Length: 205
Image (cartoon, rainbow, N blue to C red; front, side, top):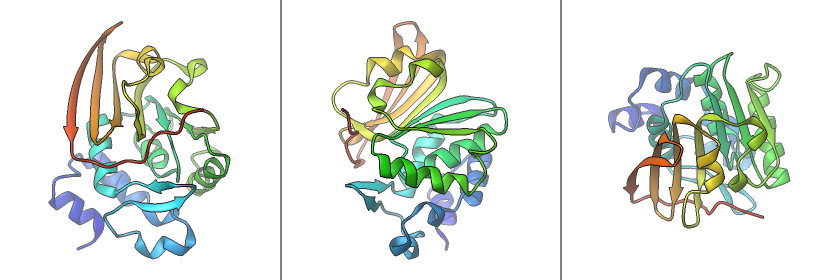
């Protein structure tokens, strides 16, 4: 059984559009050459500078929680290998926008090069920016959704809360949990916590 079939049978992948995006966006295209042979391995793989390409079941779970829709503007924080950015781009389609923030210059270039293979950059769907993701991206706010694939220290940054549309959602990790926040009003958020996951910390300046 291949990786995607495994994720479907174990109920990590459920939504037809998300399954389609996973089938189209090959994980091996986002991995360094020396580890491409591990693309079907359901675990996190190092991609350099202490960072990883996340475990597929974690990526599936977070994107299922986020439920990206056509035409949405999404902030992808700690974009690393570019895999989540490409998956999100596939889901938001031609009218959507993905803003990918990565603090480490060589990882930003690596992710950008990987995503470029899918023509999302030249079509204007994905834009990579080198900056501290904890500050968000005020000049492009408000966002429909925010995804962070690294672990925040303490509270979810206020910048993310402020830059989210009312009705929008944040999916991030904090310590060893995944958090799902939905913005109900200016300062009113519902929060669900899913414990039992492991992440690299979000690098801040």
